[in-house]
Image (tube, rainbow, N blue to C red; front, side, top):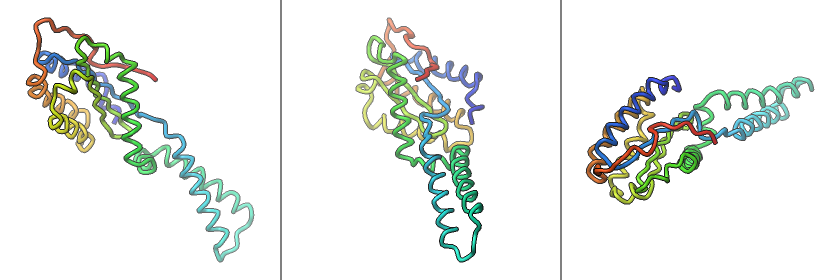
Length: 208
């Protein structure tokens, strides 16, 4: 999936945001990250659970097992459980749980919002769209000038639209579609002003 969000995509995102900001006094930034958290404890937890189940099986099975088989089987179960969980994104997402995935994405998005200086715009009109690929989550962090200008019902529609991009066959293309759909909403509630200037880069590369 990361290949869909390549340099060509970044250029398309820049053009889409430029069109959006032409009609609005707001500053939009898109940040795509491979993951929002390492979740290192989850593969270890699954590996430990796998080892426990393997040990329990050989302990209470009716068949007799040599000691080396018990030892090797327990270690193998741990390694396989941990490796599969770490290596298969779908399995890791199941182990982590949707609530934790969403919370990690939100925390990382807010940290990037602060570190990227999106709160430094003149009229508090910065907005970060944070896309976490592993989590298959999108967090939208608006500064207070934008958040207060757009009604809650409209924000609900915006967030719902972006939350569906990973249901599409091409999430990158769907993200562009959702960006284009923002224009009538943003231009209506935060129209362009005469002395407007582009205060933020359209894409950021922030390491935390």
